[in-house]
Length: 194
Image (cartoon, rainbow, N blue to C red; front, side, top):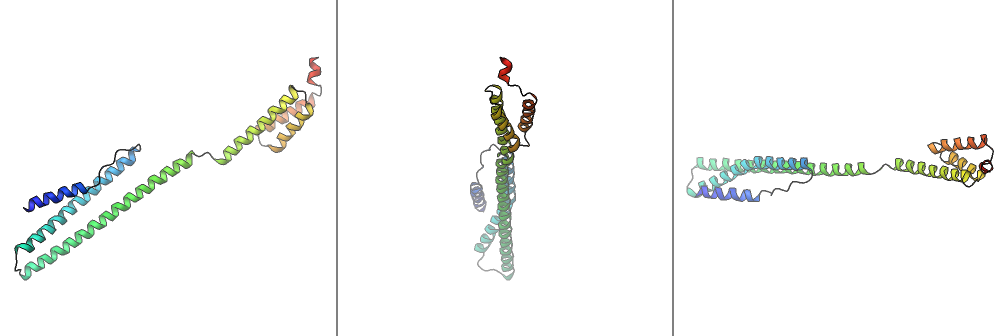
């Protein structure tokens, strides 16, 4: 009769164990969780079994004897103390396992946030790209004014503007070269073509 009760208790304990979650895209995290679950079951199953056996044995022992000697009472007291100790150990183990699982969840979240942060472009780099692009556009427009539209004064003004506003860019170097070309070649381009 007691063996059947023990089997029933063990089956209920197996049913109460958390169900396995499907493997997610992060295989290492899934393997870690599965290993922790197995460790949890491997740690708590013997403790729970021992506690159940002790409780069952204690209850059976109490019901079978109506008159107990002082020695039997001492045994019962020691068994009860052992049961309390096993319960305390089980509770401590469960708390520790919960803390480990919480730490792992926090670490996963931290990893996700760090990955998101790494994917965000750096603002200074983005600003520098926009500055370079703007300087390039101004030089391009000044080149068109000078070479295609023959607006030498507007082109000089735009080249100077690039040098003044964006002195550290490659476009500023190009603008300086264009200004020196204009100053070294004062002849109008359209006049040369005629």
